[in-house]
Length: 436
Image (cartoon, rainbow, N blue to C red; front, side, top):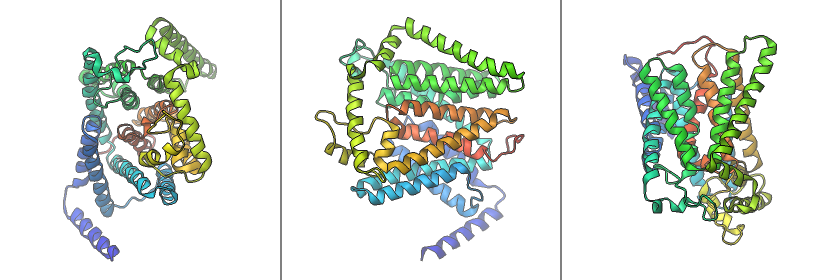
């Protein structure tokens, strides 16, 4: 019944697009995506949901007119992940709760699909989307930094009462959680570096520089240990890849000596900063005290309960989404250790959808790394975005080892942007310039 209707709709839209001299879909898609990326941290979850639904509908109509001809390797892994999520939902002991998680994943994939299709057709929209992301980040960081001077009572709930830093102000911006603010900023900061290196003119570079400085200060003032590690991993990897890109024509002996030397200098500088900045020293030291830190102790107890959940359902998990976790976790939790997630991305993937889902995400990660590394010795406008993409993804994953803000829409949508960047540019010719 529905197939003939869809075929007629496709035929009507195709002829409508053929006889009009202007293709409105790229302009509309670019505008909607810019609005979404600008508003990630500034609107409510309901507002984000509306924009994501609009993205999905727009991609569907656009695909009816111009079908996707090529499935990139990244697209293939994402389709596999979607299929595994559907299976996990079907085998879930709480299918209704799991269905909500499946719907969320479809929403994120619709944003990715529209972004990838737009960048495939008109790569020049990449800079527009980047500007929208950095503009939203600037507003968010200004709001966050103002909270340094807010009454402490508004922020006390984020302090660890057993820590020496128990009275330290931890900023959270518009996101309500300092760890989430750090997770939102980590994938954006490599974008500001791209602006400094790629954009022409004083004003664009000042814009990118301001976004970078405010973002780094904001991550620091979240006092999120995972956020700090993610930031260090992201910016360090970008710096190392950029260095390798710059010296790939140098003599072999220099190519082998310079990167380790640069890495050693960076580690020494980081150690000096940690030693001389007391808050950094205290927070980093707390990583190595095990259960002596209340935050560590809480996570360890949640991880133990999560491992028991994985042991009981290793292949298809309990079903995707936090709703499934909230229903099943109380059956395994230790007293007084309520949790909304597994506080570790690998554990969360195993808990929700089992071993195949973890393997699928590892395949997606390896493919992303492969695409980025292929770009190291190429020429063209997409080298820096490709290197920044894998740096941003690495920062997200490093923080995700001990937290699950990775699954929040603010982080997921930023991740969709970087995956779309890698997927759409993987098929460009080496010396292609911006089209459109």
